[in-house]
Length: 209
Image 1 (cartoon, helix red, strand yellow):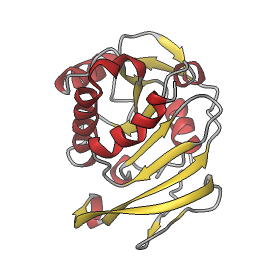
Image 2 (cartoon, rainbow, N blue to C red):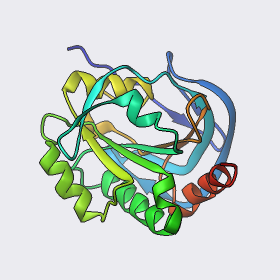
Image 3 (cartoon, rainbow, N blue to C red):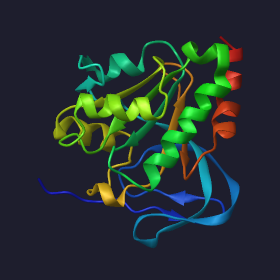
């Protein structure tokens, strides 16, 4: 399979998305302090927040409990969704992302069950349901936070749909996506979002329900 990567150009205000990327409605930047170094010495000095529309692909994934599920059904269960893409052997971006989601669970408190946290593997050939379950346990994932694997084709389809596919797992970048409800636009945060940032986005969504 021929693979390709879409490059992001980050400025003080805007991330420019490669051709075929999502339709953007609004953009703003949130400073994060010192530069953060990622794979291949890539530097992302701040997070980029914007609204975007995505079409969820009609693919099946395998949840960390071993059950085959529909991705649209999992994302459209009526709850606000926090979506990330990870792989279990990652030693840089993914542990930071997963620790942030673990902290988010704690901040949600009694509202934990009202939010669906979703982590999809970008290395499904290695990340079996059992491996994902062990990874989830390491980050104290509760029942509201589920991890997914599946075929390589299904994983790539999901990555492409949310414009996070980079052709090589070593080139992936931190992205967190949040949506209030089915049919609503997604909030996309490129860079290392904090648990407080995610909680700030979810607070209004939960209050309006």
